[in-house]
Image 1 (tube, helix red, strand yellow):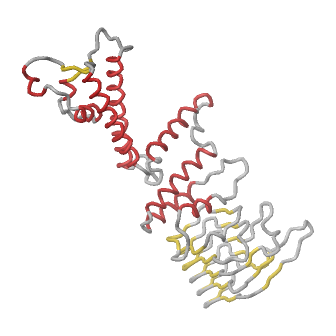
Image 2 (cartoon, one colour):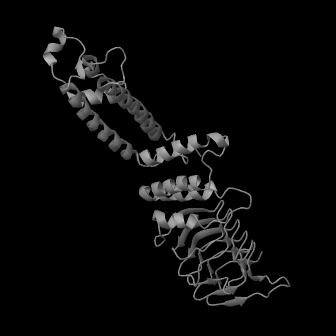
Image 3 (cartoon, rainbow, N blue to C red):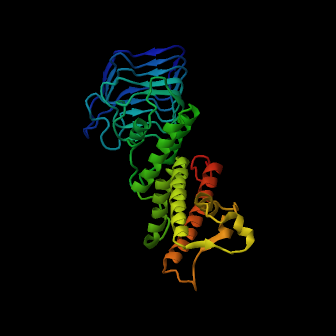
Length: 344
C-alpha cells in the first residue's frame, strides 16, 4: 500500500525469499496495493528467487521487466503457486516482458488492466491465468502472428474439474488484433479457438452422448468448408468447382439424350441446344430463374431413379440443395450470426 509519486527503480536488484517449513519459497518482493505515479523498473538484470507480488497495484507509467529473471531458482511456480501475481493491477502504460532470463512459469494476470502488452515469444512458459486480463494493443515490438498468440493462449493454467477453456482471453486476442487492423491473424486465432474447442470436447458437450457425433460432424464440415466462418471465399471456390463440374455433366447428359427439351413446341425452337453453364447456374442459385430448368429436364420415365437419367435428376437435386446451403451459410457469415465474438 505504499505511495510513490515518481518512479520506483529496482534495476539490477537481486532478491531472494527464504524457504518456509513446507519447502515452499516465500515472497521476494511485495508491492501489493502500491500506488506508483511513474514507472516501475524491474529491468537490467533484476532477479527474484520467490514470488513477485503486484496485486491491485496501480502504476501510472510502464512496468518494465526487460531482461528480468523471475522465479530465479525455479521453485516458486510449482503447484498452485505463481511466480508473478498481477491480479487486478492497473498499469497506465506498457507491460514489458521481453528478453527475460527464463520463461515465466506460473503468472496470474486475472482482471489486470494495462495500456499495451510488449512481450516476445520466449516470455511465456506454462501455467498462466489470463482471465479478464485486458490490454488495448500489442506493442510495436510484440509478436502479432497467430502462431505465437495461439501458443501463448495454450499456456493457460487448467482449472481442476473444469474444461480447459476460458473464452475471455481468446476473445481479447481476436478483438485486439482486429482493432490493430490485423484481420488475417485474428481470423487464424479464431480458427485455432474452434479447433481447441473440439480438442477439449466442448463441441456437442450439451447433447446426449449418443448424439454428439451430429454437432461434431457439422462443426468439422463447417470448418472444412468455411474455416468456421473465417474463410467464406473457400465456400465460393468449392461452389465454383461444383458449378463447372455439374455443367460438364449436364452437357454430357444432353449429348446422350439423358437431358431433353421439356416440350417440342415452337417456344423452345429458338433455343434448341442446351447451355450447360447457364443450366448449372440456374440449378445452383436459389431464387434465380434463368428459364433453363424449365426448358431442359432429365429423360426420366416412371420415377426410375436407378437409371442414367435418374442419376441426372439426383445430381440436379443435389446441386440445388448445395446452392441453398451455401447461400444460407454465406448469409449467416455476412450478418455475423456465426461469429462468436460479435455475439458477445
